[in-house]
Image 1: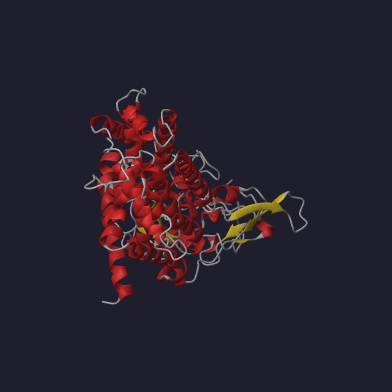
Image 2: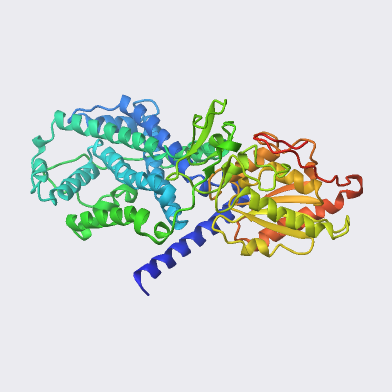
Length: 543
């Protein structure tokens, strides 16, 4: 098997493993609070736990060379109030931070989220790895026990493997008096500076995302914090014997989350660790340009039609990747703003088209041109597909026992094979790039044109391929976000189903349950009213 095929097989296996973990954790946690879907937000939570406990521990820390170890021992004995708890929580949250960051990276890699409009976030995320480890490893040095001695010397040997150091760094640790107060001040400076740089890069990492998830659901946040706090109480962190540069450290209880790199260098060599670190970083960075997903043509960007754009800003508010901005008009109209799309940032998801007030099938224009739309999957094409489905329904008599259902389902990669399995004489399955590409007016139009029910289905809650599709769709149908489904529309005839788009059985079960609920409702009491198309206009709404 070639290297590319082998990597592809590993990636598919990792994707399947994450999908299985998602399903397993959905049961006890619920999809919205599933920790596997909240890895980025959990990373931010753990960072702040580490920061707060680190500040508290620093209050009781003595940064002098001859006082560092004793002050940490005082913390561990609770001579400083809650010192042992704060130190242990700081350590365990740091280890959890590494696990979550690596899991987040692996998940994004498994689902191929690193090319085109995701490239910036991916590359800044790769750079974060270096700062994560630099921040954590430096924390071990401040304890100044045998483990700190081992880590500091191992790091010096690793840096000395570079030709311009030439062994100068490790010579600083051949005598006990080489470690001075000034040196400890440098260690403290590094341990504060690296996390600050890490926080700054985390902020940069989010700059091309709209409404990034930096706060996990409250129940999940408290649960994770409580679990770490319990671990800190049950298994408090202890120091190794004090550092002694006159002797070798000997056998030590290694923290594999951060210090496993030292064990690798001991087994191979510091030079091999450099080779592995640079090779892994280069490979991860190269994925953004030279992987199979990166070599595919980027999705066509959304296009603004100024004749139908009224500058309402809904596309700007709903874009998941900050690809839409609002600027002053360039067409001379007496309107203050217009939408502008940055093709480099556009995901081609269609969420903006679903937000546009001119994307309504009730308009009487022959060619439905909207204020913002996708050239490869227009709202006009969506209306044509719906009209064709409703025309088939018109030839079928209404039967309360066999309701006629329109299903709008997301197919972000253009694969509608799973969705097509739902289609039959009384079920029309229409694929869209994202569930939020479907304007709420299409739901009302379908119900007023012969459909007994409309189901909108997409990725599982919190796992939308375009981040916010499930959230915006839910809020629009609940009349909590513009454009919203009118309150006059019976919600018993509308259903959302957030199911993995590859889960054929899950989609079928959701449709069966919806059909059963429609059958239980007396459709004879809700006669269909023929739709009324209204004149074209920028902000046209159903009559």
